[in-house]
Image (cartoon, rainbow over all chains, first blue to last red; front, side, top):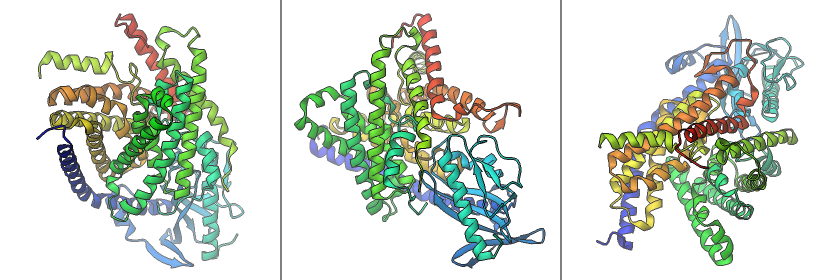
Length: 203
Length: 199
Length: 205
């Protein structure tokens, strides 16, 4: 058969495409289970982290998450458990960043006067800039942070070095990523507002 | 990521041209950028061509992604499908250009088919997919990225005309000094970041 | 695979005709992730493997591929390996996959891979093509790792996540942002070219 002819070209292309797509489907099938598991462990891990519950590795995440209760209140899915005798809550949030939807989890105490922790589940902000909201130093600022006047302030003037005080209701933003940083602040505050109305905390 | 971000199309347009320029901030679209910025007319032509391709592929790929790939659970094939569609769009553009403007077609030469493998084009499509943009947002993002790339290549071409006459050290000539110029342009564009407010 | 030939290929791809500083090819997809060393390692490893296997496959199929669809089939082969890398990363290294994001897919448009397939694999045997692909990837990897080391060390004070710089070190924010990658690359190109010029290999821009 003429290797340069149209018919051969079509047959060859068809066979090669079919072969590759088939191999890819196999690979996809083989990995799809793990991918879903990863997504679930990430989500559960984030919820645990936002509540200040330490975990190491996906196995522990699945284990520890079993002790978390899920309840529905006011249209919001609340995750709750007790820590040191206190009831604590966590809820997932989602809001607009500069480029993408920022999803995460915020953990609070029962009257929403303190944030226990913040975790980011997914974001598509600028890598190296807004994307840094996913870095440990940024998230750690929210750990055990006091909520002042019902809000968290994102301070862009000192941006770059993490705000070490946990009682001033302030966190430092990311240099060069003003919009993303302030978006996180806005999203968190909106979520605090929602949680307050559900849990009946003081403003 | 289920919900599309609530970024206004106009904001998205300006953001993708200035503050998050596909080339100066996201590093995409460099190969042909460096080679063709030696000449201002070809740079202009290529910039236009890339913009047209971006708008078309953003639109077509969005439709294919949302009406074919996702409903059939074939997302894992998206890279192949996207690049094939890009290749097709470029091929069609080539044929149109050949008929409409022979001089531009000749001037662009090999760089026209190379738009297919221009990271910026595939990059914009992938960003659109990851950020879950709506159709309008995708088109605007494609347009903005194209215009941003066009702007960057024109600026670089203009600067290279001057640099080529300057006494650049031997080891730095060509790619070296071009990189530094691009770096400075990138820094300058960062200055735009305070300009936009979202909602 | 003759010894002499493979050493020549190695030397050429890693030094004399290093894809990045000699030909400034294929930097698009990887420069963006050079702010962290671990991302760069995985990314360049991915590119190296894809280049190697793509060249291998193209070389194996070269007598069967019709001329008209040569570029398309090559693109298909490259896309195939990239998807495999992406799926494997998503399943077994989800954090890295998240960090790399769309840049893994962009390996498809990496000029180096298509370049090697066209320039080498189309006219050489499978094993040497594989080797050519791998060594091109290594040349590419070397330069980018260098950029990443500088960027992560000065931008975050860490390397591979481990704190290297003392706590009093104030990170250079510029290193975290785009322009630094261009500047560092320019310096590497400058040094590489100058050394080569001095060695008389006479490469001009």
